[in-house]
Image (cartoon, rainbow, N blue to C red; front, side, top):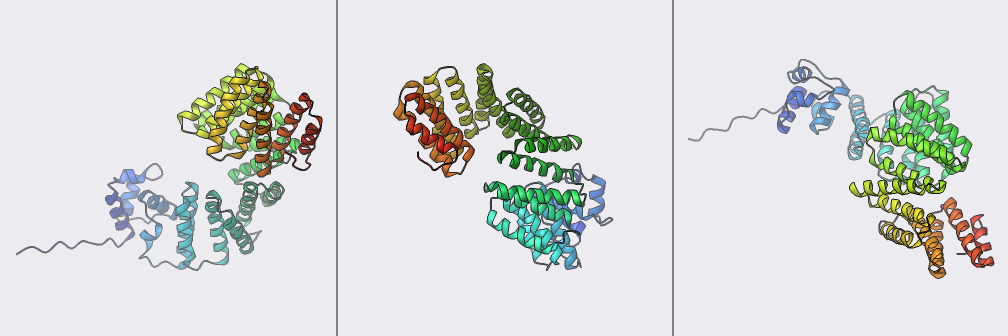
Length: 435
């Protein structure tokens, strides 16, 4: 007679569930503990000798790939406690950019009838996921709802973060004045309520500096970037410090201080090498190449642009490789090599058209226009310049349109096409589009 199968003991207690989930993944207690906890602590949790704090349980749950609800599902917890569990789990998921988990934890918390205040806090976390996944319309809706649920005095930090998120959303849409107002509202709350979160403070100053610069308030941008840098340096926020140096460099460039800009970019690059942030490092290399062309340091410019191109190709970043090729084209033009410039810019433009980056594509077309003009093919030059202007007009990038139109006007005037040159200068000054 066949024997009956053994009765499988279903894990019931929190400790038993931790042990079962750990063994299912083939992890040792030491592996589950990681750097944040200890093997002894995990052993005590599994034996039921200690109950982990909410934060410790969240670490365990994340490492085991389970929601906190799995471990506390059979516990006699109040709805308030369950909401709190899910909110902490959502915050932790946001810290590691796991936006799917953020949405799941927030939705689970909503299922336990959170208070008005808890709902506001949960929505604030949900907004971070929506902005990261470009669901801007829903983010605006949830920001407005959360601001109506939270008390500015009691929940100053959450409210400040919501204003920061709103500024970020406006900036992403290109609405710079509205973005600045939201960032300034956040900054005022941080200062008035003496919120000490250094990460929020430094990133807020960085965002403000960027909007000031985009609005051509250069002196204010420079001062704000320097404040962000000082705070980031004190709190070891290396990425914010690097971005602050980049902002300072761009502001100095706007003021015509090209040597100062290069120095600031060099400092940013040094920090990024420590962070091993390839994306930002590529941006710095491209910026250094661009400024070097403007300084007339063509050998240096080619070196930076080539470093950027090779590095971008190595990590599979087609966009930055094409942007670097545009800088190589500019350097070639400045050196009098119109054929070489045309070859580089044409290849860059094809790549940027394929990946639909209109702004960078307009830069490549601008280089093509200048190269064709230098070769004497004025019809091809006209086509490239006018297409570049059409692209930046479509994306409402007025500063780029003014720069391209001004350059094109100079080419037209040199050919003796005075009326067309005048039209381009009007366009550069903000007049109607006559391309």
